[in-house]
Image 1 (cartoon, helix red, strand yellow):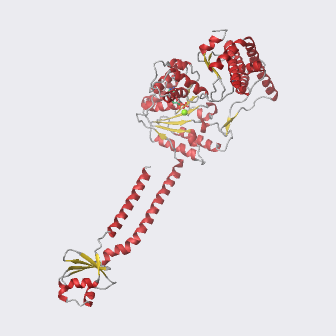
Image 2 (cartoon, protein in one colour):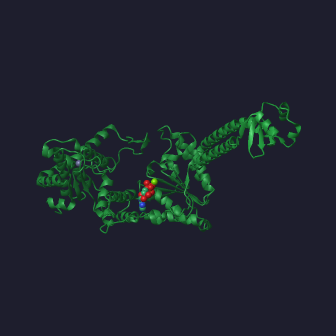
Length: 606
Ligand code: ADP
Ligand code: MG
Ligand code: ZN
């Protein structure tokens, strides 16, 4: 940008200069032109003080301070002219005759400038061209350089550990790295070998990038960050060269942190042979390994990498001396969610009724990024409604928006479809309510959201990490609740249940292939999930079982679904009244909250 402005300034200056020169020549005062006879008369009358002989004219100065010019014909000399007119020589005496130095003034206007100006213009033109090309060349030459962004210690945007809530263990682990970056001597004196690489693992949005920045912020060292995908470019060999350059830069700035985000983009297991860019990735990965082995252990460069796919990483990355420290970032639990919400609420004007604890309770399974998003959505919504403070209700609405997409209140839906949706959702809700294990129903709605026609929101009362087989079967029953209610009421089903059925089927499959919950197939998993990515899509599962086993798995899946179906059908049959009541209320209000729902149904908690 600066360059462009400078170029424009230069051009403008050049033009101004030319303009000035031209106007200087052009604006010479042109005296009145007179004939030779007039001049002769004036000389005879003694009115002339001097005659200035120029290239193509005589400029005559008169006694009355006026001046005039007389056309000069070629090389006529003034004396010849005057002689022709037979002027008395004594009249000539009083006149000063100046012969202007033709060779100077006229040389400029007639000879040099006409050549010099175009030459200058052409020169300038080439100069600009060359400059442009040099720029392009530079860009081409810098292709192999890493576009790593260094964010030095600018205090304003500095991230510190206090900006990262939760992830206590991860912070403790990284505390050591910070200590080392601050005071390496303390460690080297006792002969400690500092880890060269730290690998941050965790679901998307759990704060890996944030935490890496916080380490740099805490230690007050430069932070070179690059994303794995930035190594992979159109040209072969660029990745490896960028890695070299990145580490080169880092070594010049010790102590510092090199952060490779989304390292799975280059660090996938080698030799899986999928995809065209795979050779390039291998070279890049090899270069990373070489660089990490290359620097002395206590040089002061610490490599932090982040990924949400540790399962696909090449084992060579994980061996000691490379990324031997692995720090796991879990999804935040209740207390952590509250803490994260607090951090992100700092600059937002919250209404008095806001209870972030309640918000945290309603957001199990949310990542830090999701939570930040919830508060941001709430702020946007508040601004859109021209309110000054963010209310609890707005935040709770935003949770559902983040979870399921925005409400589509305007979707036109016929009364018949509305009724079917109401029965469907009532079915989910009632089955969930009467089964002992599923999470309590928080909200039932027939307002379309995202791609769903309606939704039943269930929330666990606490964070859970383990689930039993019976829980899964009841979960399947709840998923089928909508479909089976439609069937019980109308005798047929609609397309609205497709995603329920798919989820139920997938869950049943997981029970067998991943969790070993089938009584007949024994404690084993099915399918080698070491996935490969081809054209950005996962090709799932390498089959590691026989054709007969595949058949048995299918039978088992059908069995689990049947168990869920029996459970759900039983509840739908015996609690038909409850379903009717909930449906009626839904048709009237479209959305019912937990309290209203519990008032409508009998049974536990009612
Ligand atoms: P990742 O790299 O793990 O995918 P990021 O570090 O990019 O996730 O996190 C995305 C955003 O989510 C952060 O910028 C921050 O606003 C928010 N966030 C995530 N985890 C936390 C946390 N533990 N504390 C505070 N904010 C967080
Ligand atoms: Mg990230
Ligand atoms: Zn459904």
